[in-house]
Length: 263
Image (spheres, rainbow, N blue to C red):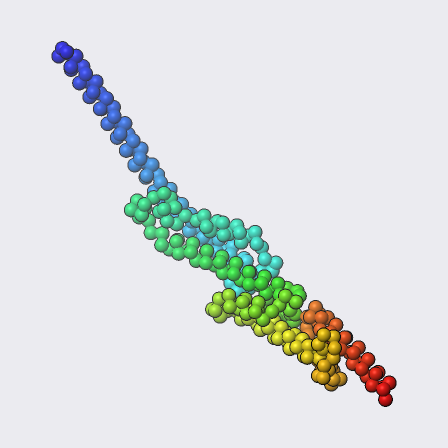
């Protein structure tokens, strides 16, 4: 190979290497520019997220009566809560949310991250309150229209049990508040009604076994239980107990007539 041929090949290699270097430097430059754009986008987005958090907090306040963070509005807007939760979950507050490392994104987002966590925590509180109210309402003949007052006017239905009421009570947050105090008052009233029902039911069972009167089925005991049944608030439970008393009443009447005939 002649000297000119060798020189030509060397020049070709140098040209190729130069082209590769230029491409590599260009790629590095583009990567740096892309990284810079990501960081700038992240900074501007985080600033906007702070505004969104304030807006979502205001929207949360509208789910409460009088914006007092205690009693939920009635009727409750489920769709609005879902929208707020979706927007809150989508908030970007950390470097990883933008595909960046902490070392690339030095902006302090601690306050905004805390704001997002507080917002999600408040959403969870609202969901727990709503679920608790629904569980309580499922054991009542009619759901309250105002959970703030009127616990003494409610009446339990046939699904209410001491165990079920206790389960709701145990799941509640132990932190005392106007809302928790009100729900506790409802549960206390419901528990008292369930206890009253079972005590009356037991008294009836002691007077009537297998549709036959027992020794405790006296007129005085019948009148006593009859008056107790009249105090039962639940129409469903009262009807059930009254039907048993009707049987006892008829049997007592038959017994009295038989005694009269035998005399």
